[in-house]
Image (cartoon, rainbow, N blue to C red; front, side):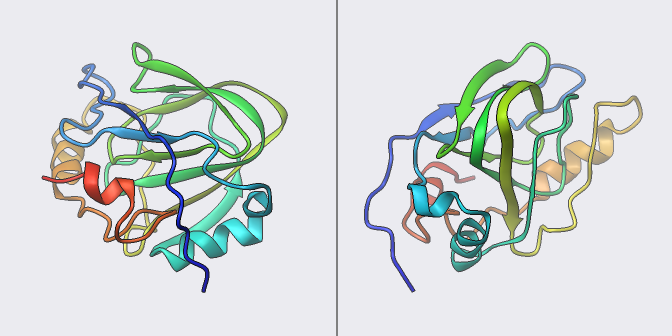
Length: 175
């Protein structure tokens, strides 16, 4: 098993509830710019890296072009191809440009939406082990009480998806 020894700079964004997208009141969205080297941008290698660090249910796809969130799971998106403008935090949130090599860790409740992509944009996504059966929420009326409770109860990941137990996520996410 290979162990990553270099860490990357980490960008943090904390989003407030906008009345439709609850976001997460305590855990920031984390972006690791250019955290994946060229060999890790292959889907199978990226999936293996995530699995080694306790993130499972990996899939390869894009990001939906509508605002959505997961109330019962955290999510990591590893950009393996192309680039995209992703809106995080709902319609009034922050739009971030991501490209191959970037990694985004999304706390439960934080909205995300693909505003446009180029170059056969694709990501490898995964969730912390035990959270692979995630829901898909869009801010519909009536879901609020349940999703707010779900978000509060999602356990923290045991490890950072790239750097393991001593990675940036484990130092930045706490309750």
